[in-house]
Image (cartoon, rainbow, N blue to C red; front, side):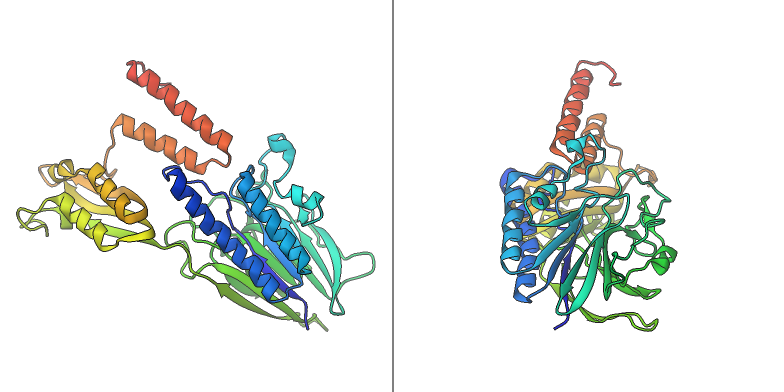
Length: 413
């Protein structure tokens, strides 16, 4: 039997949603835990030799005790089944500065207790040597480098050195980064260049970070991205989430790359849907499609009702050009309440809606919110991007301070 790896990444346990109520948030986090547990159970059921986690196990550097305890139980089950667990830190769960949590990752706790081999440095490639089924493997890792920036290559100048006893049959490297040709759209962040991969002395490169999975071979190196275990955003990838199973069949010989077999094991994500309604559908006839006498709010509520699903995370997206008087007639609070009643989570997106004046002219900037709405929206975006509860509390406190000045008639600084 060849050595078998089960590979996962981007589990984002403990993920926070600013607008989600406490009970729904806990349910959503159960979906995330269940997805990670699928990978753990898959490794045990398939009698894997190694369980490799390629970063962003947690969504924050300070996960709740519920998630910490859950992962401890998973690692204990893997250990009891004879599966060796190894991991690297990702951009979400790695401290961004040395003084943040003392520079320690949440996963360091499991490493110190012997339940996990955790590669915590970003400065060099660390590795351990194992023997399974008569095959020698060196498994190495490089953590996410919080100090790196756009234009830098996280693997450049970092050799994957052989152990003192010589090159093993397989060299497997784990890391967390974007790859040239496989990145998040519009992301300005470090990227591993294809030339770097081609020069890398590794038989297998396993990479977390980008949530869509992929596989290719470059310079004798098999590059595999396992993808996320849950869908974190709408339409972020066109496949079901899951994990990766890799069998290392034949080591490299005589300049020929090593031969392996990989399989994607998928499961269903929590349902998500996007309901698109155009300004034309809300505009009354004869200039639009809305029948005479029908309220535009009823159009929206009817569309939402058609997609009723108590498990679904739903977004109602309004787009296109809309007369200003029609927009003024919309009761978005009423629509929000109707959507929340038939969905697990419901929100509206008006960023693609353009308002027309009485001459049919629209602004390319779209809907102009009130100052109060803009303050709340800006604070929400900052909170959603925060990586710790302390940062979220800071943004909430900042909003409260600004609103206090605003309500007193002062100009916020």
